[in-house]
Image (cartoon, rainbow, N blue to C red):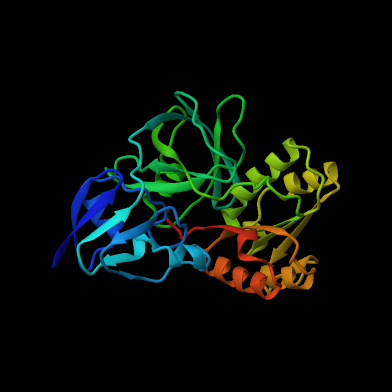
Length: 327
């Protein structure tokens, strides 16, 4: 059965099947309803149910506060209609950018740094992500976080991991050339540096989740912050690490920054550093008075949130960017 969905304040109407999410139904009919991950991890598709009934599927903890739930807010990529509905939700502007590939630099055995030069200024906040069109695959997009704050020269920097079978990453690693062009949609995400308090920072990054964390760290340095910052950076195996010398150099230049690399590989007996990401966080202190920034897989984020709540960190102090592999 199909139900009519009306979006406010745009007045856009479309039909959604009982087994379709609101986001999926909108996109299938060419309606650019604001969204990000599509799997309940980021919260960019948050909307408010004004009329009607829907079935809310599971999503990442803390995406909705108790007050937002009480106000009828929902995660639309996980919401299925059970009646005609009227929903307050944002429709994305149609603006796109064309950007040229200027640099491809290996960072690790399976990670490339991609640098793009947009044709015109691309506005974003440190920590946000861009949606990049997959070359040769009409309608397919991938989301990647910028790894620096906005730069004076306008260059966009990304850390991209190769995913076997991933259309975008396979193109990037094996076919991309300098001068190739890509299409970008506008920046998205609520993961950015909060400047309304003076709490010390706890940053936890796994894999290429380091990218937006690096952008946030660089912005804090540019602002002249000297409050304590502790970064925990986790990898499965030693070859998976990248930018360790960069991070160590930042820590030398900024004594308030502490960097703790953690390794999960129990068979690497020569590793003298910390073992396992979240147990290392647990063993290193109490974090109740910290502003916390997390970036990594949904599983890591959920476990980290549980850990932080057990340390009495308030949910409004926890900011996260959860990403599923989407190469």
